[in-house]
Image (cartoon, rainbow, N blue to C red; front, top):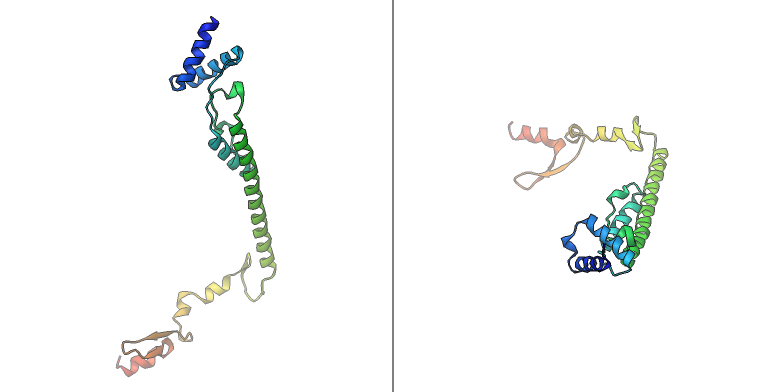
Length: 173
């Protein structure tokens, strides 16, 4: 291929990169590197930085095939902006992952500490929760006569639920 045509192709790409597919752009990038001419690379620093942040916070569980790629990256590598964004993403993801580990560890430790400090009054103890307390405070127990819960009647006089039978008798019911 004529070197003049190669330079012309590279200049056409630089003027309008959207005309070319990603494969064509990679081929033109290789030609530009071989001819030592300028090649307009696209840059995605925000997408790459966010990917590195999430990937690092997830301890590398996200496959690298989801990492954003740019035209000319295989030939020229990442741009300076992308490298900085990736570095910031790695640091931020490391901090986020570390904070998550510390909080999760503290939660587990506190859960086991609470489980050991249970009072023992309950017949059923599940993970530090008093299951019998739920049985004592169910809906039927709330309406039982031994529970004194305040309410108001239509005359704005206060009475208690445990006084209900006497009140109904006095009204003739």
